[in-house]
Length: 479
Image (tube, rainbow, N blue to C red):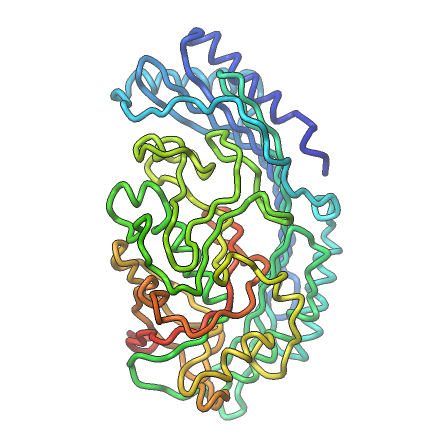
């Protein structure tokens, strides 16, 4: 059931919560409520057949209040009048049992909205048949290879209100497809998987046939891989692999809580990246995915974090901003222990220009390379590796952002600017900022429109293909 964000059912529920809080705790309580309603629909396929089609419609109510110097927060999916009243009573009771909270930053004051979000009505109203048609196109384009993956649509309507008289509404939608094609070797070797992913605010932008053909080409080109020894290699990371760098920069580096705790390498005013790199967060850009305000009720604005290699800012919620003597940048997620999360982070060429949207503007080339921008980076490498994707990444040292993980869905040896042989799965152990430091970036290719985000936190990341001069391969899949 799609509708405009100005339809204020969520706002009415948020204001109802505040009324109950005032009735139970008095007018001196500081309280804020955020209500989000999300419609999520998912069509999954395996062994080249749709095997699951599910839909979920969930309203979540978040309440945070500050009473007698103590702060409590809670969430519920129960929205009847009786359950709302019980929920408020429990939260007030928790506040009276908690220790004082001297870091409480106060409520967000009334501020004008920066927009109402990026809701696409057609995506919000998408049917199972529309998703299944894209799955069919993916499978057909895979040309007989075993295919698996999903196509999903999601729409969220949100409202925020607090007892300082501040209120905002917004809505957003997005769609994503993530699929693999699996090829099998006639020599009895291990199967080879190729992947293709795409995300957009609009389901209409997803081309299942194009993605299926891309995944199949990668799978076929990855058969009968060779082993290579550990060592330091020049790598070309496709956007799917580079998106893990962008995600961990958002979580571990530019999070104001991590900076104040001393676990982030980010240092405002220092040259910490190659001069070819800029990093921005902008939930207000046309086509950005996400609500236009954060969990504190702060409207979002464009935030420049790195300019031509120099770290110039950090992301803050109201609490971390108060601690740092700064102003909230609108990146609160409602979790004081986590801090701020720049959910619309993009790593861009110097100057902060994405260059026109990349993926849909380049010409695809044959074989495992997805687009001409990646091919151009590969052509400039004398000896190195093309990496399609990485996963199972874990942070070993947050202060230096040293990460270990595995490659997947295709690695190829580059020799004299050409792909020569597929390579077996590799383990790497690498400091991400060291790989991106001055002199480490040999080239930056097209920026992906949107990465398919993490399951545990909603994000809209944009990553380019990266040519990096030094990447530490520490072993194979076994270690």
